[in-house]
Structures are given as structure tokens and as C-alpha cells.
Image (tube, rainbow, N blue to C red):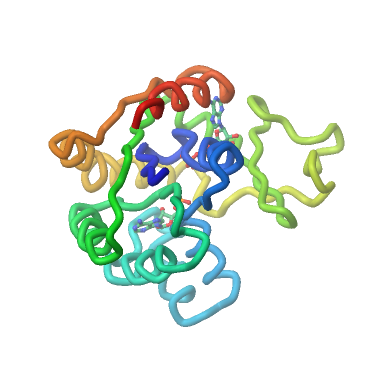
Length: 215
Ligand code: ADP
Ligand code: AMP
């Protein structure tokens, strides 16, 4: 299965990608996670990316396209993958198309998660991530252990630097301007499947699995 998860920040892409990864035994390819790893490692790319990420803007297309191109050639992506947070611009979508032609692969579906803006802000401000195992939580909707630690490994939970309200507003604006047009792009390719992302995590997962049936 080769899938793109499309949707604004906080729509539930990472949450659903982790569930799909288990279900189909294919990797989640999250450009956000890869960029955060580069920031953490303080690589030259990470140092450059951090400025854009902390301001809620997009990292330049050529950087992101380069990391995805390399990642999709790795062994574990040969049977399928879940793209989470990529593409985010028209040039990224065009480059992905070209890379897939080169690799002789075809997308099965682009799942577009539909979530209201108010719900997105609430999801992002309550999002926490385990600093040890990387699992995601929400203070209200997917709560951590009672002592505030990770339910899986007991690790310390962190809030992302870009999940503060001022940055969130900018990320939403950038999504509307640069990423939302990709819905039309993939609709024209016959790949777009809109899924209601407003219900709880399990119900959204079920709706995605139904949408993927027969694809
Ligand atoms: P994205 O990857 O699209 O930015 P996430 O998957 O990280 O979004 O989800 C953002 C936050 O919302 C997380 O804290 C997650 O636990 C929570 N969340 C995800 N899906 C739902 C849902 N269907 N209902 C309520 N909260 C959700
Ligand atoms: P995410 O984890 O998907 O919310 O991404 C966090 C941040 O990483 C974004 O706000 C961007 O700054 C950057 N980023 C992630 N994916 C991309 C992408 N495909 N193109 C450009 N920037 C990206």
C-alpha cells in the first residue's frame, strides 16, 4: 500500500500513520520527524531547517524533496509506505510524481483528513510526544499515564516548540495557501479520498480502512 496522508497540522496524520504502519507493516515516512531528527543532531540541514520550523514556515522544497527521494529508495519502502506531511507544495507533489515514475511505483490513495480549525488548535496545544520512544499523546483525547509520563515506556513527554499558539496560526495559514491546493491536484489524478477526521482516533482509523478497501 502506498498512501499519502494529507491534512492540516493537527489533523491526525501522525496518529493514523502509526496505526496504519502496524496494520500493513509498512513504514511511516514523516518529513516532520526526519527534520526534527536533523535538528536534534544539529546537522547543517537541521540547523537551517530549524529556523523555518520554529517560525511555522516550510523548509525549502529542495531539502525536503532530497530526503524523501533517498528515503523511498530504502529497502523497507519497497512494499509500500505512508507519507505523512509530504508533499506540502505543488513542486513537492510534482517531484514525488517523478520519483515514483523513476522507481516504477504508483500511489494507491491520498487520504485527506477533514478537521475544523477550532479542533485543530485544541489538538495541537494539547499534543505531547515521548522524548524516549516518540509515541504521541494528547492531554485530553489520548492521555498519558497518571504521573504525566509516557504510557508505553515511562519516558518524559515534551511539547513541540512549534505547537505554541502564535506558531500554530502561521502553520494554518501556510497550510491553506500552499498545501490545501493539493486536494484538487490529487482529485484530478483520481486518488483523493476525503475522510471525516472529527471523530475519535479509533473511528477515524476505521473510516480510513474502509476508504482503502479495494484500492
Ligand atoms: P498531525 O500529524 O496531523 O499534525 P497528530 O497525529 O500529531 O497530527 O495529532 C495531533 C494531536 O491530536 C495529537 O495530540 C493526537 O493525540 C491528537 N489526535 C489525533 N487524532 C485525534 C482524534 N481523532 N481526536 C482527538 N484527538 C486526536
Ligand atoms: P509536521 O511534523 O508535519 O507538523 O512538520 C513540522 C514542520 O516541519 C513544518 O511546520 C515544516 O516547517 C517542516 N516540514 C515538515 N514537512 C515538510 C514538507 N513536506 N515541506 C516543507 N516543510 C516541512
